[in-house]
Image 1: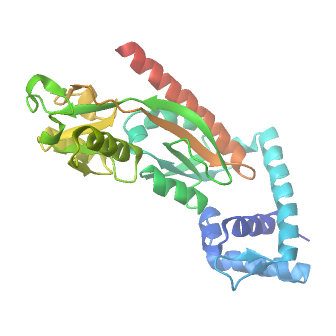
Image 2 (image 1 turned 45 degrees about the vertical axis):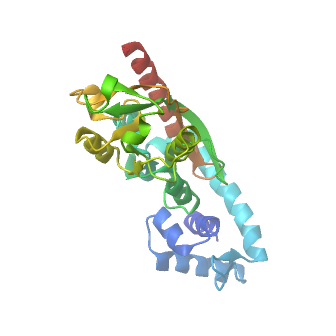
Image 3 (image 1 turned 120 degrees about the horizontal axis):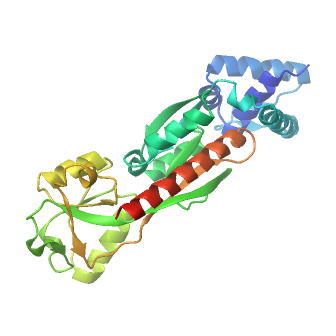
Length: 301
């Protein structure tokens, strides 16, 4: 007879095209994954997976079983939700988060998740968006709160909130506390990494309006960008609310400027199908948390 655990192991190994990724996803070992699938193959009497291909692929029989396994696991997920087992069974969610969210409303989101899903533990990875979306597709994380919108095969997305981008500098660094295209070349701009939207957009705008390569210092850590700005290294370009100095000691001043960039738009990315129901609920909590944060910021100014 087919066991539910064996079908789950087979499904995730096939879905992620990897025994090792399935082992990480299911919190087990790679030999354990291999043994389960070998037992299924003995039961069926034919190979289910082409182990010689990299990444692994399914045989014809394997594709048939994969379809049935998905149906069974989707039904089990619905049953668990109807019986509220999704809020009783202990589980781990590997969550990827952009640092802007870490610096703003992540703590409130986790607190709300704990109220509604006390059975969920989070493993949190902080990164920029491109590697997070790759990690989603490769099964290294389960859900991402990242810049969007983006098309990620097998995943859906829910809009969270927008963060306006502002320039910040140590008081006195710029005469008149205003940043213009004319004086932008006088100081390095400290901002997000090269593979993110703000860097590319800013570089193009400055190049087109000044006809010379801009000086842009990039860093994946907002805390590091803030420290460099406080030390007078340059002018920070970051999302509103993401600087500690923005709300605590006011040692950085928001600059008036004619260099305007579109806001950062954040989305919750989570899988369609098997395993997506609970993650969809977490995305709903993220959306509500983001909305409340944006409302509070709007009415505080």
